[in-house]
Length: 256
Image 1 (cartoon, helix red, strand yellow):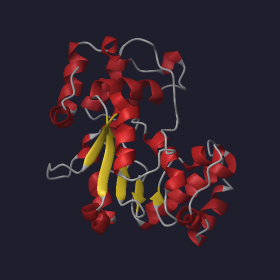
Image 2: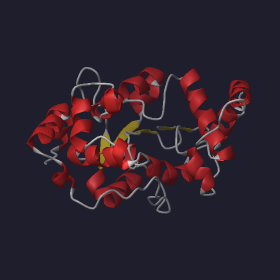
Image 3: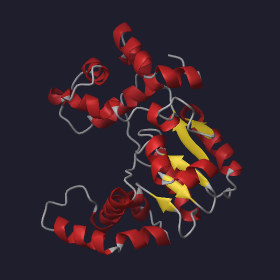
């Protein structure tokens, strides 16, 4: 998530939709007091410097206290200092604003009501059938083959809202919460289509008044099986995803 006061926009970060890449592209051009949540570890490792607001969050006494507490625990996956900056900034957001990296539109409106009503509100939208396949391979990329659920087991767990295979957790992060308010109204003033990402990003970049140098970065790339996403589906799983994502499929005209 980004709240840019300098450029007057909010970027809602739906998972597995190039959100980290967009954040890396935007970070050098954010204002001193703009707010960014997530991807800071990747940014620092690529030589990008966090803005003043982020540094202020990281050096807040609560963040320092959390870090001291974390030193007594295994610090797995935090990528050293870069990971700490990302972690501490995230803890500050949860504590102060009640937001996490993948908070939806409704949560953002509650935390920033004025900005939400006045700023551009942008997110990336992706074909849900393609998204499910991408999320499946990313989510289980580190599991041995014998421990991975099948794609059908994964979709079924999400559809039935079961804790098995973290299906219920995944269901809470589906795209509709980034695109629509709880009353069903559209949350966005503009959106970026994932399947035409480079051109769409360039269009939105120009609309927001960002410089041409803010080209799309790369982050969290992962090679999945080379088969087309349609080959992962049978009639049952295709229809389950269609039902789960019916509202965004209809609004953004996605097709299987």
